Length: 276
Length: 300
Image (cartoon, rainbow over all chains, first blue to last red; front, top):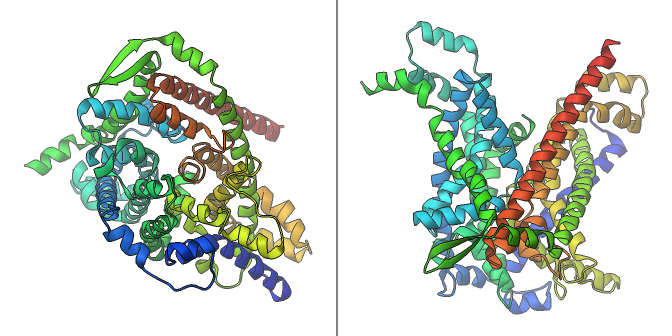
């Protein structure tokens, strides 16, 4: 791209600064509200005494179970991410190595496409009945299984693009040296696609952490995740703005950390996931 | 040896786990929707009781007036938010790509909303939109404008929800287009500059045509995700006031889990899946047709 210089550069910086302000504004606003006493929120005060009372309230008071919710969210996100990486990379490798042209690989990928397009609520109904009849309703296991299912298409997509970049010569050389199929996958190909695993892992974790539509309907009080808890603060007869702000701030911490340390992988994952 | 066994059979079982998940938790539920759609399902003593009532569900579907509002709202929501996001995302990508310095940091901040929980985004904007103490009405008060009931006024609610979606997803359009702009061939842009093309000419005649595929991908992808929008809207308005922000997925959630009409909800789900599958087929047919037309044109 041709860099702008002189006056045009300042216009360019100005536009980008506006865009950044638009993105950061709401986050600053909720942060400021999260460290206000309820009364200062209601009066819309610009000068106020900062407090951590809201964070203490959501984390430690009896009326809130955010610590439990955080634990549920972490368990669901970690377990489903680990499982989706195993299942997704095995499946993607299978398609990549042996089934690229087969009809059923195509059917699988076509199904993945349709599955990505339908609103997840259409499936939550049948899931609800299924898990009820299996006795899994209101368990974290049900949540983990559904999160694996929704993140599987994206993971397979990302891993397929990475497997395709592994040079064929490596396969040939390893085969000649007497390397078996599983050893090839485990010792040779997998170490080469670690960046893909990181991309898919970060995104799966984030999407599982963020999921609301499934968790809302498949969990009850003791298995509720963080988004469900936030919605409860926002949906009660009297909206609890202070608690809603504090718990939302806590809920966005993982995303902030991941983008600070893994921006490269996130960008790569999002662009391959969408473009391919 | 286990490893030898794994080596010999790996070819055969590597696809099983993912096939298992896709069959058990996505194909089976969709098939399950068919008998569900033909029944009325009620819960008694923790067990589901099914009765066969296909006509009733169809009548509910045809007589659902909220559904009509939901379809209209969804189309409006998808159309307007995707249009705004495409324009804003394109210019943001263009300007960031032109910055001599600071591109990485700008990029990091600008893609942040993609990763945030929809519910937290809903909370943020609920605080911004608040009638009494939200940022917008405070600014309006300073400027001497009458405060607006952003989420409570039927005229404004859907637009307010669109603005939140723009905040959430313009970053995604930005990201796709920024990556595409970064990989544009430098020589072409250089040549345009040497030939004395103005900035506007370069954008309109060179950059936009070259970005065609990326623009299409971003627009299609956004239309799909906008169609599925649920989290923020649930938190912001839950479809209200009245039915003014009732989107399809919100309506579906209400039918399934608030009105407990599982049978009718399944019928509605099947209708949505059918419409989506049909539109995928039409899109594929059209693009294949266009491609063939292109090739024929090039051959001549």
